[in-house]
Image: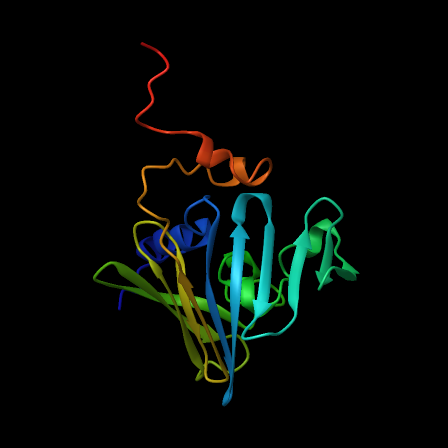
Length: 196
């Protein structure tokens, strides 16, 4: 475990980057005590767009960044002010938006990072509770990309498993394609050279 402020600052910077800007889908696991809930998630990080469907047949929550509204099954639940984004995002998508996690030592956060450790391709931040310094948690992310994987505390656990994009020769323009035609990526083919 490295407690040097320089290495800790580097690790925090990578973790706050949140990983790739490309849109993705995956499964989110949220556990509190013995209660585990799974969600199918679709996230466009740079556009702050997301949807989370409770599995197997639960409600779907979405966020519309244009109206700043969180919806459940298409019905408005509540609106967020700019300063509340992403702090009010549900657990199902919090790992996709690292700033939404209460672990950075801010005024209302429960934890703050105190050390880091690199294990293979992952980095883990050791977290200490703000009020009770004998309580610890951990936040793990991919070292190279900054993609969040897990947040573990004595009372809860969050885990995100991203689905790998298909290796089918199509281009992924991430948030750019997500704002327009969803089939835009399908229109581009790397084997068609129009500049001959």
